[in-house]
Length: 267
Image 1: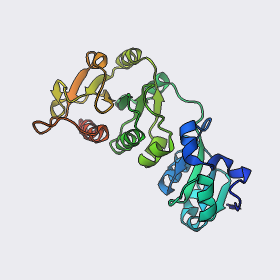
Image 2 (image 1 turned 90 degrees about the horizontal axis):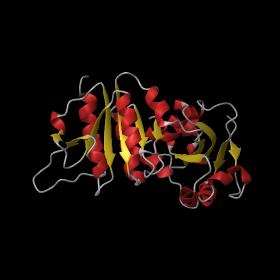
Image 3 (image 1 turned 30 degrees about the vertical axis):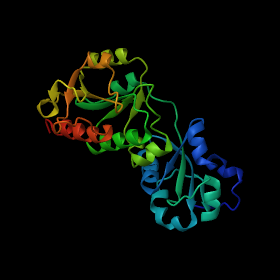
């Protein structure tokens, strides 16, 4: 490893890191930002996404040398002072570790489903546009052994910087794909032998009484509106029963309860 010193925030070699928050909103044309030590480790060790470069605060370099040994040969590692790194990012970078990754060609939902094992648990997200919730759900999916996450077009990009950070890198580990036609997608799952449960406060069955099948798809909707009525009408719905007079949980918290329950069934 031969760190490359960056002294000018306008150095073209780190142009991809300029004004991070503004580019979060505008998009990066096939790139994403990985932030923090744990996330960098997952980016370099899982191999799901290619790393393009690393930008690190000079006093953090020694602490990530073991992680950087997992990097492909020739990966540029840029080093900067706190003042220069803050000027590049456009705000104070207290973590001091950034990496630029490449999204690559997205896998289709159909191809992803076909690659799953005979016993599989997948999470299906519908209308979840909050990056914190998406990141937390991916973290829960990784914690409880889900095999994949599928997202409809109204969900936010899991590779948004904040979603990756909140997931503690789980977005870089758990396979995910998008689908466009929800009705067609439910049929696609049915053809592949998936039982499909929709999580809803108005669910037909208490989740404690719901039995896990070999192949299960768990649907989660946005807070407030929840899953569309048209989708609830097609699927078996399950609920997390709560205290009388209160029937609302954050969708990320609800996903943790549901994934824990279904991951434990049959194990």
